[in-house]
Length: 188
Ligand code: AMP
Image 1 (cartoon, rainbow, N blue to C red):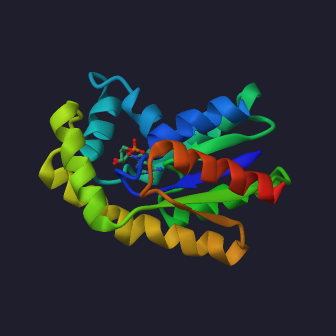
Image 2: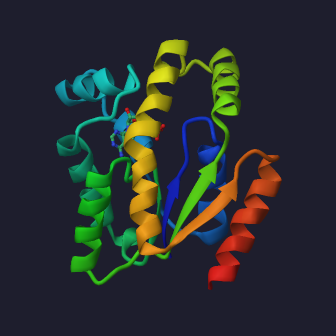
């Protein structure tokens, strides 16, 4: 199965993606994880960090090769869960092109939605508990704004393709996961 998971920062995407890859046994392609894995001491890592640390999107020339390289790996031939990718309409179009060439289509786009005020308080709470460099007040606002202006339009792109499954993220994590599984089952 080919699944795209879209949700704003703080929606609980990480938790749900972990559960989903375990339940479906498909590879997890998280561009955030892959970018964070770049060695911060290397020249490339410094460039990547300069975007992540301020909550801005890394440029496509850094992101796209990471994605296409991962997709060429053996375990990704029958499907994967895209997490945090595509983040812009341009990335979505590039992914479409890549998949069409291989006669693959996205089965479902999961949209985990949560009201903006809930997101902000969740992110501020997480910032207190964890020590993520991109979880301070300024960066949180930047990431929410980037989501609103650059990533939300990706949803319209997929709505036009008719494969979006809306999930209410403002519920306990177990309920959210049940909704995801029952939504996916209805699509089979
Ligand atoms: P995430 O873990 O998905 O929240 O991503 C953390 C950070 O990595 C984002 O705030 C961006 O700086 C960067 N990032 C992750 N995925 C992408 C992407 N598809 N395009 C550009 N930047 C990304």
